[in-house]
Length: 211
Image 1: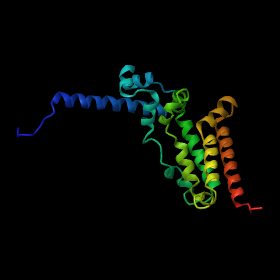
Image 2: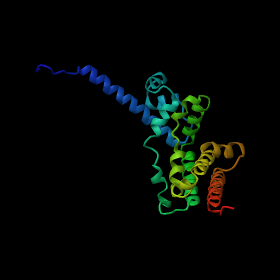
Image 3: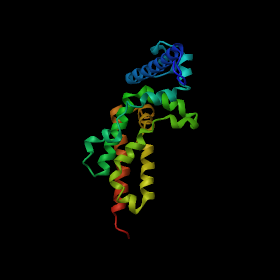
Image 4: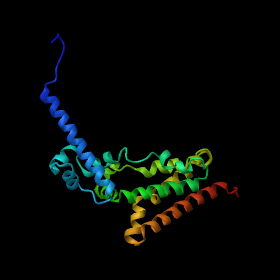
């Protein structure tokens, strides 16, 4: 060995590789469970990954952080999600497409979504662990308003985005399916109508002559 060179003991490298394999196995197990739409728990993830629940918690401090990382890379970008309306400058049409896209994702990943909400709703400090997909979709859907409403009344555009954040959400969908007992498809249609109505009202107010 030349002076100044260092070597990594084989045992150290082996342990590092084993830790990486274990971590990846836990992540992959979470992804597989998410895709089923069933309830996702740390215990079920551990069982699927063939590790103990304690081992899973050593790699991920809580379910929310595990689900956030598992979701990363599984979700399309806002540009990909709204490809069908990429040529449209109509914010109402774009918001409707964004809303339907998000809610169908929620239905497809319902177990993971409910688990994420449950894991963070009583611990507001951990809310950043949620992916926040709605915000990117809303921003991209309303991009045609950046040079109009965003220029003339930026506060109004911000209010619209905040209003839509309440509606374009898993919480709104679950309210309609769980409490109002709507069929999932009817629930999606209801949320899309509400989001479209909010957007249309903002555009109409923007176009109204000052009086």
